[in-house]
Length: 133
Image (cartoon, rainbow, N blue to C red; front, side, top):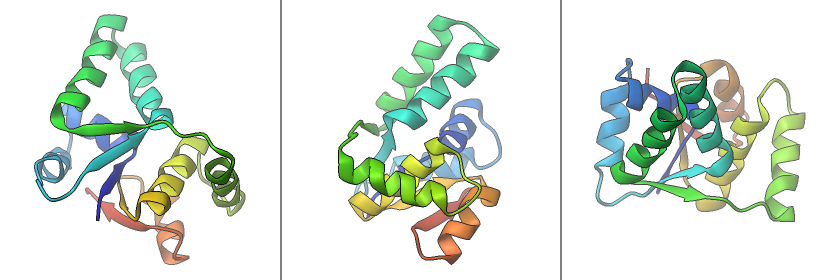
Protein backbone atom coordinates (compact mmCIF):
# COMPACT_ATOMS: atom_id res chain seq x y z
CA UNK A 1 0.00 0.00 0.00
CA UNK A 2 1.16 3.52 -0.76
CA UNK A 3 0.56 6.81 1.02
CA UNK A 4 -1.11 9.87 -0.49
CA UNK A 5 -0.20 13.05 1.35
CA UNK A 6 -2.49 16.03 1.58
CA UNK A 7 -1.25 19.60 2.00
CA UNK A 8 -1.76 19.57 5.78
CA UNK A 9 0.57 16.60 6.17
CA UNK A 10 3.21 18.07 3.87
CA UNK A 11 3.10 21.47 5.57
CA UNK A 12 3.36 19.83 9.00
CA UNK A 13 6.41 17.93 7.75
CA UNK A 14 8.09 21.00 6.27
CA UNK A 15 7.42 23.23 9.27
CA UNK A 16 8.23 20.69 11.97
CA UNK A 17 4.70 20.86 13.36
CA UNK A 18 3.13 18.14 15.51
CA UNK A 19 2.83 15.06 13.32
CA UNK A 20 5.99 15.86 11.34
CA UNK A 21 7.86 12.82 12.72
CA UNK A 22 4.98 10.58 11.60
CA UNK A 23 5.21 11.94 8.04
CA UNK A 24 9.00 11.66 8.12
CA UNK A 25 8.72 7.99 9.12
CA UNK A 26 6.28 7.33 6.29
CA UNK A 27 8.60 8.99 3.77
CA UNK A 28 11.41 6.72 4.95
CA UNK A 29 9.47 3.46 4.59
CA UNK A 30 11.31 1.74 1.75
CA UNK A 31 8.43 -0.60 0.90
CA UNK A 32 5.87 2.20 0.39
CA UNK A 33 5.71 5.08 -2.05
CA UNK A 34 4.43 8.51 -1.01
CA UNK A 35 2.35 10.32 -3.61
CA UNK A 36 0.86 13.81 -3.73
CA UNK A 37 -1.43 15.18 -6.39
CA UNK A 38 -0.27 18.37 -8.11
CA UNK A 39 -3.30 20.18 -6.67
CA UNK A 40 -2.10 19.38 -3.13
CA UNK A 41 1.45 20.44 -3.97
CA UNK A 42 -0.02 23.71 -5.26
CA UNK A 43 -1.61 24.22 -1.84
CA UNK A 44 1.78 23.78 -0.16
CA UNK A 45 3.33 26.17 -2.66
CA UNK A 46 0.80 28.98 -2.22
CA UNK A 47 0.69 28.54 1.56
CA UNK A 48 4.46 28.90 1.72
CA UNK A 49 4.43 31.78 -0.75
CA UNK A 50 1.88 33.68 1.36
CA UNK A 51 4.07 33.31 4.44
CA UNK A 52 7.41 33.92 2.76
CA UNK A 53 8.65 34.40 -0.80
CA UNK A 54 8.94 32.57 -4.11
CA UNK A 55 12.40 31.16 -3.43
CA UNK A 56 11.21 29.66 -0.14
CA UNK A 57 8.10 28.21 -1.79
CA UNK A 58 10.23 26.68 -4.57
CA UNK A 59 12.57 25.21 -1.95
CA UNK A 60 9.66 23.72 0.00
CA UNK A 61 8.50 21.79 -3.06
CA UNK A 62 12.07 20.74 -3.86
CA UNK A 63 12.46 19.50 -0.27
CA UNK A 64 9.34 17.37 -0.63
CA UNK A 65 10.67 15.80 -3.83
CA UNK A 66 14.05 15.09 -2.19
CA UNK A 67 12.25 13.54 0.81
CA UNK A 68 10.55 11.09 -1.56
CA UNK A 69 7.19 12.64 -2.46
CA UNK A 70 6.18 11.54 -5.95
CA UNK A 71 3.98 13.99 -7.81
CA UNK A 72 0.93 12.64 -9.61
CA UNK A 73 -0.71 15.06 -12.01
CA UNK A 74 -3.40 13.11 -13.79
CA UNK A 75 -6.57 14.94 -14.69
CA UNK A 76 -8.34 12.35 -16.80
CA UNK A 77 -12.14 12.12 -16.88
CA UNK A 78 -12.30 9.07 -14.60
CA UNK A 79 -10.32 10.89 -11.91
CA UNK A 80 -12.08 14.24 -12.06
CA UNK A 81 -15.48 12.53 -12.08
CA UNK A 82 -14.49 10.63 -8.94
CA UNK A 83 -13.32 13.93 -7.43
CA UNK A 84 -16.75 15.37 -8.22
CA UNK A 85 -18.49 12.44 -6.55
CA UNK A 86 -16.34 12.81 -3.42
CA UNK A 87 -16.85 16.59 -3.35
CA UNK A 88 -20.62 16.15 -3.66
CA UNK A 89 -20.70 14.01 -0.49
CA UNK A 90 -20.31 17.01 1.77
CA UNK A 91 -17.89 19.46 3.23
CA UNK A 92 -14.52 18.80 1.65
CA UNK A 93 -12.20 21.04 -0.32
CA UNK A 94 -11.62 20.26 -3.97
CA UNK A 95 -7.92 19.68 -3.20
CA UNK A 96 -8.74 17.13 -0.50
CA UNK A 97 -11.20 15.46 -2.87
CA UNK A 98 -8.30 15.05 -5.32
CA UNK A 99 -6.21 13.53 -2.53
CA UNK A 100 -8.96 11.02 -1.68
CA UNK A 101 -9.56 10.14 -5.34
CA UNK A 102 -5.84 9.59 -5.90
CA UNK A 103 -5.73 7.34 -2.83
CA UNK A 104 -8.56 5.29 -4.35
CA UNK A 105 -6.75 5.11 -7.67
CA UNK A 106 -3.43 3.88 -6.27
CA UNK A 107 -4.95 1.73 -3.53
CA UNK A 108 -3.30 3.96 -0.98
CA UNK A 109 -3.96 5.59 2.33
CA UNK A 110 -4.53 9.32 2.76
CA UNK A 111 -2.10 10.95 5.20
CA UNK A 112 -3.49 14.07 6.86
CA UNK A 113 -4.14 15.97 10.05
CA UNK A 114 -7.52 17.17 8.78
CA UNK A 115 -10.05 15.16 10.73
CA UNK A 116 -13.00 17.41 9.85
CA UNK A 117 -12.74 16.64 6.15
CA UNK A 118 -11.46 13.07 6.19
CA UNK A 119 -13.17 11.33 9.13
CA UNK A 120 -16.53 11.32 7.29
CA UNK A 121 -14.89 9.92 4.15
CA UNK A 122 -13.15 7.19 6.12
CA UNK A 123 -16.38 6.28 7.95
CA UNK A 124 -18.20 6.09 4.61
CA UNK A 125 -15.54 3.77 3.20
CA UNK A 126 -14.42 6.24 0.53
CA UNK A 127 -10.75 5.93 1.43
CA UNK A 128 -8.42 4.70 4.12
CA UNK A 129 -6.93 7.49 6.24
CA UNK A 130 -3.95 7.79 8.57
CA UNK A 131 -4.12 10.80 10.85
CA UNK A 132 -0.75 12.25 11.84
CA UNK A 133 -2.10 13.88 15.01
